[in-house]
Image (cartoon, rainbow over all chains, first blue to last red; front, top):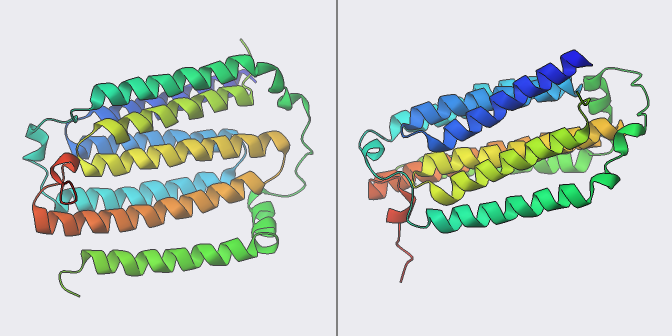
Length: 169
Length: 102
């Protein structure tokens, strides 16, 4: 139990610290590196909750795929002169006030609704098979149609990004 | 020390969501805005996996997989648009792109 607590706070620190660095760094490459740290923290949180398949997907897909794409685009659009400019837009005070208002609202919900968070006292049934096996069972039986729709979405995204990035069609 | 419950995960998820929202609303650089959207989607995923763990079912994790698929599609199309934009306007700052502004 204690080791769980220690690891939770470690991964939470990685996630939130990486996220804050991501949105405050001037250099976009530094932001991307901080985002990788944050995503690895989220992967650790998945592992703490016995979602081993999502842990692997998070590392392979996010850190290995999306972040390489981001770094590639950062190299492609030369951001050297952008780093010298103003980093925040003129409405940042309004935006910050709105976000603080939403944060206060969420905190109020947590405070008022804390009695309804007694969910952990329900003991979940012990898993009889591995996480990946259970995921595959549910994904290919109950969620087969959404799975196919997701594959069509990916196909459309591939075609769309090629069309967008092409010089002339 | 209190044991870690799902409330801890929900609070962490809310904090990550707010940080991502600050990034989307205040930064000028479109690449970093796209990164902040990834942060927001990750906050949603933490929430889904936490509830999936509490209820002992894997449906939440299935939805997390679909959210990841959406994030991949969004990143690919968004970065493609960004490249096309940079080729035409030579800028990646969000408030300098005001073609539709009257």
